[in-house]
Image (tube, rainbow, N blue to C red; front, side, top):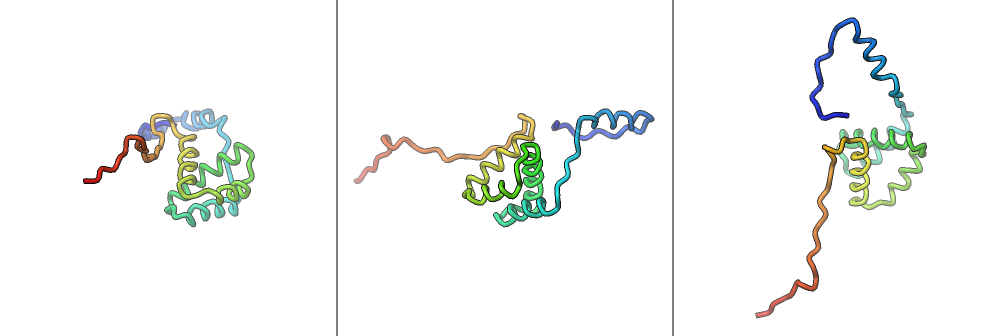
Length: 122
């Protein structure tokens, strides 16, 4: 993956050969419709936009297939997470597929030192 803009396709006689060798080690991934619908529905039910749910579902399904994990067992595990925990997990899954120059993050609230916080009554 790169962050570069897409280049214009070359229309020469070597285009098909280049495509064949560039994609030689890439195996296309396919998923059953019921798994895709279940994962997308899971995230939509938790207030993700349609496009965000589809993007997150694609990454989650891909990683589940690579790790040989049953998607439905994974969803059962994710149901136990609170909203903040789910957001942190989604961030980690999405960052796994991204280059390090474009990772996602989230803000955690800073806690002030309790020994230095005092109430002053006048």
